[in-house]
Length: 491
Image: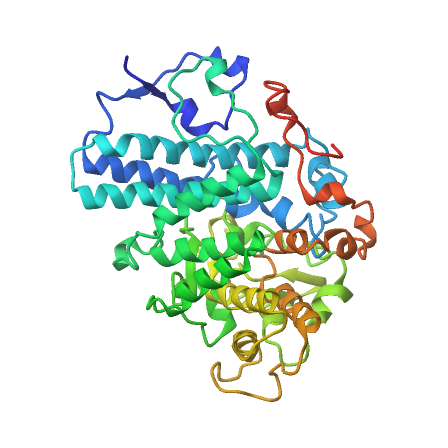
């Protein structure tokens, strides 16, 4: 019996409601008219990548929506006065519940990407084309699937593992039990291990696709999260010593410069293009940057406590003024605007302030500095104290931050003589400064076991509790299968 791939199933989440099932599909493709040629296979994997950056009618997954969970759910960002949506304000104050629409959208978007990957993985083997290219495309889809499950397991804990496209639109066929955390991580590792066979690089036309180095880098983060220090060290060293050509940009600003996208520090980035309608890209995520009718009274009250974060940077640390701005110059009129408090700046495109939603700056999902700091952290934990290698890794990141030669020791910024506890604190401090607005903070605080302690320092977020180490399973999903999807504690 032919399997029907309905458009609705490609764009929906894990489950569809009974109401959705009553909609008569107006267009569909079958095995007879799709997945025939290699071009079909390429197009299907392009759609898998698009699930990260494009969701017409909604804020895209990595363009904005995960920000509400991974950044606003932490200690350094909060809803501004203009954020009147009660769902957003609940996320900011950590009083959200299982009906929160931001959590529901995140679930839907993650499983939409997983489902697209499954469709590609299931169907590419039967197309006519070069077998090497087909295998590569399948492994690219596995990379995205592993990446998305890595997001899901950290956000919700154990989640349903779905590895094949739906073969029926009957409700029962779309249900799936909630797997254990260990089962989800086993699948993530399997997918990413397969993806390690991807090419080391591509031509300029294919820049931004998943690579062998990207698979190893995400694996290093997976093992770091699992506190599997030995494997985290192994994979991080493979990234560093594997001949991939990764290196730190000499200038921190270059990481977020659109003319340097997919550069030597970018291991894997979510791709954003200009004038891509509905892409929800990062430029407009955190503040209005349009100077049309602009008022500088309160453009974005998104920093929860200026004293805690804007002021943590030491004099000479270039990361502060790349990450935050107290003033912005309108390049068209020459007018200088001064804000009442700092705004996020990393994704501002000063050449495109009039239409900030169409920013072409990529979202750096994992970059070389992350691997250096991850390896330093894992060595310290595995060894019981930092080694010379661990010190050099963190010091390279620090030297770049202070505008020093990256590989030349500099006593004015280099760390030395720390024990395990002090080095652990230094790594945590460095990550806080390095990865502002990059979707890292909440994940870091949870894996360190410090979320409640750190977030309680922010008055507006003092309702934080241990329940906030996970987000709730969306109630809309539990309404379909409450037995297979038990709720997380505290929700």
